[in-house]
Image (tube, rainbow, N blue to C red; front, side):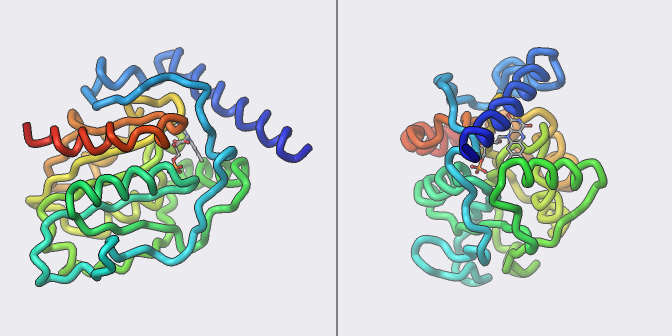
Length: 236
Ligand SMILES: Cc1cc2nc3c(=O)[nH]c(=O)nc-3n(C[C@H](O)[C@H](O)[C@H](O)COP(=O)(O)O)c2cc1C
């Protein structure tokens, strides 16, 4: 019964997103508006609730080879991401594998609840009140200085970036860096306000919003090759 109620509430929220999009609430299709790279084979979609939240454990600040990012290892690519229910986790691992970049997962110090509705409520309240949640990210300014290119992955939350990613962007010097966004959504296919927020907060960076990758949450699991092709095509 709890699962059914949960699914109904999730469907209601997704309908709200869809309705807002249809009303032109700043969320037109990526190709029309931002040029964001969409991989959209519309399906019934998988909500965060169906897949369940990813554990908000300690930051994964190593890449798949188990190396800490250091100022001397010569790797100039960072893949940093936030994920609640696992879609960005998948996408970020593919991006890191394809680029050979270091992989870092941002989590909130106070973990988001397992319940979709509780997480949605907290996320809305944080956004409405401009809260910058404390984050787990074991990356010093010196370590950040080694990266020229930062792949930046996030789920759209309430038509914008999740607030922990605001905290992250405001914590570092972005001068001279290139940020390449990739994101997932359940209707806000152009990221709504998220890409402009990245551009605004990452002062001094070149943000490649026109090249951003956008994948609907329900399609992420079958999008490994699309993600890899996107990475390969970035320098064309
Ligand atoms: C709190 C919350 C708010 C969301 N807000 C939006 C939204 O405004 N627009 C949208 O298209 N999807 C929204 N979604 C759906 C997520 O962007 C989508 O499920 C994404 O694939 C989740 O990525 P993740 O599995 O890495 O957390 C929201 C999900 C949550 C949990």
